[in-house]
Length: 89
Image 1 (cartoon, one colour):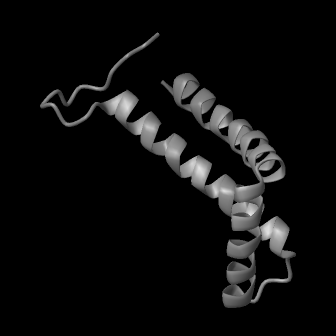
Image 2 (cartoon, rainbow, N blue to C red):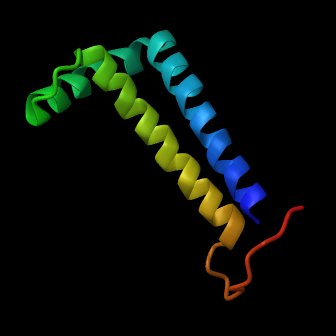
């Protein structure tokens, strides 16, 4: 069990860093949005980060959140009454 869970968490970390950075760098709409959100985050929290870095962190957190939702529903189901966890290995 720890092997499965650990691999999923490690995979989500790597995917989050790579996909978040890639999307922020290659999508004009996402780059503009992430810089805008990064400006809001840095202003509200008062952290000494550039708007671009803060925006990339927001994109990474969003990807990580979506990965967690997907992992939860894949692992535990959609609430169809089956409370057993699903085993894939």
